[in-house]
Length: 92
Image 1 (tube, rainbow, N blue to C red):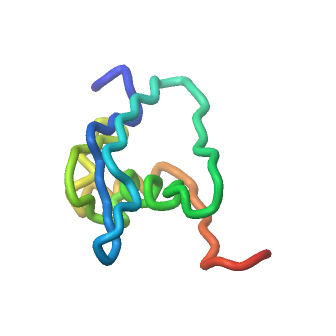
Image 2: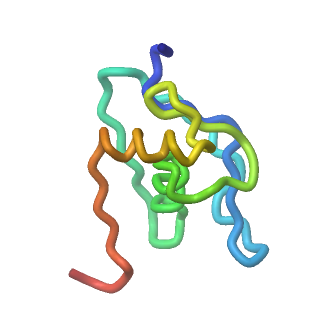
Image 3: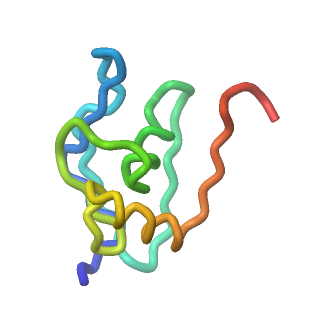
């Protein structure tokens, strides 16, 4: 197993031809605390959903817990080991 819990190289995602994420490179070492910060529409939720296997990337690679996120079955294993809550927009 890698010393990194999250590894991403060149992850890309577009919606209706508009790039939302254009080449995410990310290494998160085991034992660290990490978060995404940014303005609305910056791609934070898209990044998380790609890394959880909820969205299919348009390119690049990603691994979480040493499991490739491109594999649907791995996405299930990844999500069983983490917690994530997303709103559908609007305010709570």
